[in-house]
Image (cartoon, rainbow over the protein chains, first blue to last red):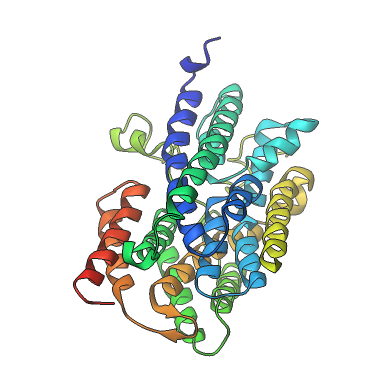
Length: 264
Length: 103
């Protein structure tokens, strides 16, 4: 069949372009945070999860230690385990495909796949978005890293402001409703209180512990915060072509009766 | 050199998280608390990273041009600007405020 006729593939391509492009900002910020070109590329090639990559360089830029940077990136990567569980139930990859699928498991590929209802389309959406983003994200990371290393004083170009904007941009789509906003505010306050008392980088881990405790003991939506940075089906929400129940909304933790392929 | 080591450990652990989902029996992870903690921690970490990058310089706190970047990014996001435009708005505002003399 003609792959371009598949809505999931077309969605995968457009999400790849939108996400891949902001690899430029990651590449430029990474080299101006003090990482080398190849350290920057290693993050995009091997770690390959936007939020965790920005977290790693954000801690390094703030003067934090390597272990603090690693810890922040790792804690932020936990949600990919939840996505992997959901995608495994949707796509049932076998053999070597499982290992490749795991590396491509990120917010956007999960959202592109789970926003479809037909199993074949779910599969096509995942691979189109996953491979497309992987290729473009790395390409644009390299472009950003090469451009960033020739910039001179990063502050003169406001690149520290770009990092602030990037983190707010990653947070923003997850703040739907009162509860996530409250969690964000509590963690922001905990961070500010911790900054003068602990080494750079550690306040972020303090906030992670606070957030984990809130998540463990409170009873809210189980998919709180599990939103892609770029919602692949956002335009569809606006045009109202599908039902109003947010079809593109990612719900890896939705109750098992809603989850396609649940093993019960 | 030691940054390389932590960087590669971070890469290995990131891949390990991703693999866990594919290999651990779904029943073990079905506890909705796991996905809830993953979600609230994502929100908490990103909120914390936003605040640290805005106000912290090492162990001291300051309100400088980065605060302008935060406000500009918030306005851009409220206007539904794409991610790259949000980042450029943050950079442009911080750079402009520094030219105007606010560090």
